[in-house]
Length: 256
Image 1 (spheres, one colour):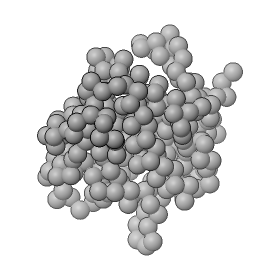
Image 2: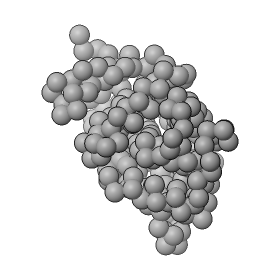
Image 3: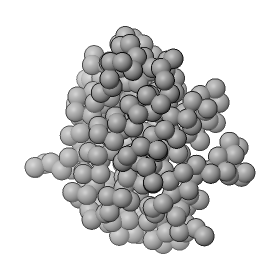
């Protein structure tokens, strides 16, 4: 997780309050911390959901098949788009929490849980009995960005990339590019929902994108058409243009 020098340890109640505040944004930021969720046996650690099971049902593989069928696209295209949706969940929650002054330890092996789903963002639940984190309010923004980049890369994006590539042949650079684009999307959505957090979130996102393994995957640009005036330009493509009638995304590297 983060280095002790980054900030003081956040109390469990502080971490939970920060996540509840993020959850209020809704959409890809939604994350439950309700203890009662633990009674639902369909929840499983996110890391276990992403890994290809040795036997039994494979919810991610099944969702991948559903996406491919629904889009009328090949499995590789569907895998890329599913990966972007999945990346948006952890990325959005962690960015928003950090922008609010708490960097939670949402370890996907034990803390952050998900369950099978058939559409929209994958549901997330953070076990309130295991919540820990770091109070980064007042910490050096560069240190916070470095810690956030490390947590996102090691704990969340790398396992996602491995899990998707175990099910479909997709370039790892495409998948990492999807995560970078998800970060930019989270900044814009959070800016609309919580204008008071926009500047901090943008600074953190810029810091993450300046560091490996996110460096070189995209940059923020001006977008007068968006209320925030903020856009994003990727150096990779999510392959959406290969969906029948899909076209090119606003941040696509193929737009010239």
